[in-house]
Length: 390
Image 1: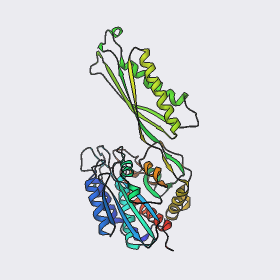
Image 2 (image 1 turned 135 degrees about the vertical axis):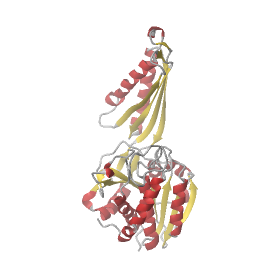
Image 3 (image 1 turned 120 degrees about the vertical axis):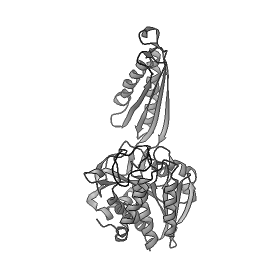
Image 4 (image 1 turned 90 degrees about the horizontal axis):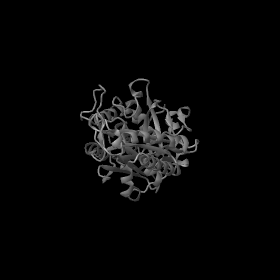
């Protein structure tokens, strides 16, 4: 793989930075230490730093030559509220928090590209290094866009990399169109009539109502939508009661809906609402559905996907690029940036058949440091390719 030699030279330093970030994870909108570290490093390389975007977010700006062309490169910085169970020397030092999705590595790959580009200046135009907070449910990408990210830093095209432990190290998914799903939250509250468990006939059991809702909800995907379309309805939490001999007053259910098309999203919301109301009514109970729209689908733009495929193939090799990979039902708030600016989301493999093949959001996950020079090289190649010097 033709990793850029200069990036390979400072791989040990980058790995140490990644491991330091991993050991000191920070939740969304709390990434103060990480943001300070990123800002110091960028400034030490002569990159202009703008802070306070979406709170802890920042943008590094690097200009060279006279071209008006620009490109944005984005990395996320936050961790997850999880307890790490791995035994790596750089494991989390913060109880209940860990980098279980590789954002420590994404941040480091972008830092590697920034250092190389600041040294070589082999481009003509402006590079925006976007370090985003709160990807894990906080919608930091949306907040950055709402706070004028692309008005303050006009960008012709924008790209992001995400590690993929299911792909072998150095392979990449670079596909046009929808690549990740919309992620919506559902909350169902069932109001019954509590009482003694030995006298159910004078009660209205919200547990029974909730259980029937769980089963019926699966009919939405199985029987209410075109089989060619894709959706997931998962009710993941069911809370009711406090004693084994008491029928409770209330049952609460929460879960998620994943879709790709707005019309499917609307249909799922409509059908779930009807199911919840009708089942509750049939039992003399009352129930309401709260359907909260979350991240929209992540949709890669066709022209920019071709550009990303070209850059990734240059670094990784043509045979290692998956150009028609099927979409996945995960979600990403880079979707908000793609709604405002043409670009592409790239998945790049880190799997080694061992501990670096542990899945995302697993308490034993650890980013593969061998991926750092590959990802940094893809980022740098995108800049040199798209802002080529005349």
